[in-house]
Length: 56
Image 1: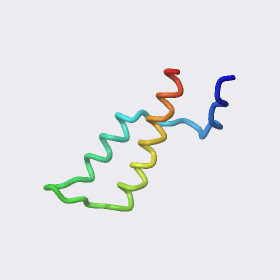
Image 2: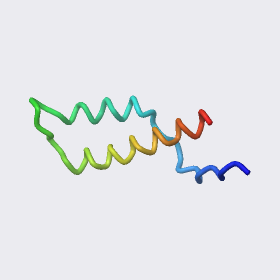
Image 3: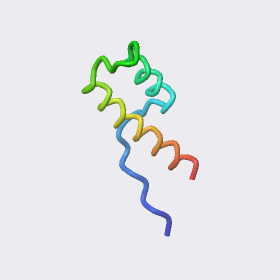
């Protein structure tokens, strides 16, 4: 039996979109907003997971 897909959490941005925003937080080699970066990292992980589930 295939695993049950996760509950829909609304629209998920692509990992590439989130990654671009994460990169923008790095200025001259320093992180400008650690809390925002952490939130984006979690969103990025969800986007990657969603793309893997969709591919499967």
